[in-house]
Image (cartoon, rainbow, N blue to C red; front, side, top):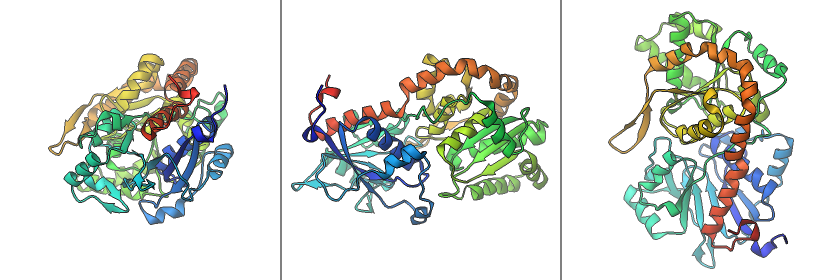
Length: 435
């Protein structure tokens, strides 16, 4: 089979974030890495890093993907106005600014998430200006069919669907993992080294949560659950490691504000807060490499994510790929990939589901509704199983990891993205994608 020549390549301008530890930049970088590794004969890439949502984020610029992948990202071609077939935008606000060719706007695909299954006009902009109303946004999308979208979950896709954007312009492309990074260590020394660094014993039951520490991540549930487990029930072997994103958000201030409110509401005392931070809760907000992030997954015994609203919740998928059991609500965006993994990947041994329902607000936004009691009891009733999984997961893990790689790798996600961009860009399929 002859390799496609330059004329048959899909020429894509990627406008988005690259150099910061934000979820949109992470998604963008892993997609760019796969495009460079596997689709160089299919796609010619140009990149334009867009202004960050907060200017101070520029101080957090660094690449944390490992030497090989960092090199691929630094070799990307900066766009200098070259003619392209389509634009892929992955930034916030969701940028609908057109790029023109011969006076006509070329196809534009915009990546977005909607944690609450809902977005409004303020989430979208053109040339830096936000839309003034939902009606103005709907009118623009109706009269500009060259604009399409991609969302990582059905839950997220409802955000744009409410503006009557048809499914053909609102494609669901699930996130993935890089299996060479997120995996279970066969050598327990790395797990022991990380736990020792945080003063943890092997007998401790370590819960882990990674993220911005905002309310929709379920952090309030996690903190109150730790209060119940440690202060009220005396389960001092239960520990919590919180990995924030201090380079972008004031993660530590979020944690402090939650405890201040709990204190005012009489849910906890100052002594009980001190007790948690002296012996049960470890907080770090340093940016780490993805190899080190995988070490954290390996060091933990449960990834706890009783989230209120998420567009996909990539860290849950990463945790599973690393062989770490997860706790998630029965409802919400993770349900889509969790159920598939449980069905096909022997994942039932790695998944704890908290009873939940979906609450819908008058404006159409949605969120998971849970009880703190259920979260606490889930930890308590599964302590023995989670301790035994430290050993048992080695036997069940290979099939789980293989199924995640087969169904939820970044390479597969990018292949789907290329197909979608080709279709939207109206360029002919090469033989590699024919049929």
